Image 1 (cartoon, rainbow, N blue to C red):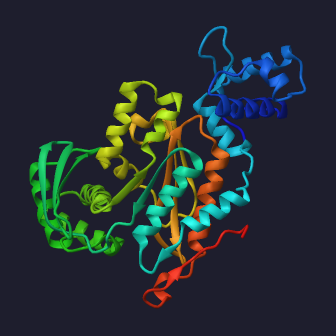
Image 2 (image 1 turned 90 degrees about the vertical axis):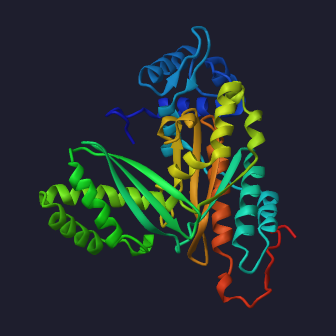
Image 3 (image 1 turned 180 degrees about the vertical axis):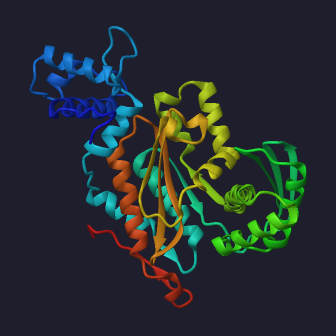
Length: 371
């Protein structure tokens, strides 16, 4: 894999991999001496220093102080995760512990997610979170579209199923009239009240576009774009409504030097406690996607997490998505172990028999492999 059109040599890859793994382990800048003596890189000190300087120039490494060694940059972590991370195998003890802690009773989806969050945090030593799927019964019973300025519309939504009023400010890439926004209110109330996320489709949007064009007597393309943007914002808002998010091991943030700054730590804990920004960020992830998602540093949509990594994966039981699990930690994260733990956790849950097929009162008991 190449970044910015540059293909790293095998030697550079080897040195970069060793630096990332050493920094994950030590939490300190890594120098050529360490790479020679501890990582046993088979090159001279001068060669290693030259390669480190080139990796720094290419953006894969950073030098926090003039006389210090190097640490991985965000790009370095991304390259490591995408191309260099080694497969981590759970030990028999870890696998057995994971299985035993996932024992659940029929229909206790909340218990599955609670156990999964505790297991993930305990086994990785990072903060874990789990997200429960949004209730499909949630709908909006009333809409109000308000004109703020020619490129800004505020949509107010009063929800059924949850006691909530949500607002969404929509920044438009084009200008609209106050009359068009007023007409949008009518169209939203005519077509979107009582409609669940699962019922939103292209046919519905086409009908809305035609109705808005007829009502407002505006350009067809303009009406189409306004409906499309509005429905997308409504979809995202409904995705957030009723979300249940759980955190485990928030205190583990204190164990990592990256969170020693009290202001930074306080902001991170505030984001976790308020939940709203994190729910909004993860609600944009496709809930049917089976792939593990990795957001490093500035790739995170929550600004306070720009020095952190979020690893996120949907969980399935009997082939049906029941929620998601995530790990939050420093960019200097043990990616190999975290990815292996999340994958194994997901696999164990998905391998359980379908809860719907079990008689009432049935208990699923997963025994340790080493018994």
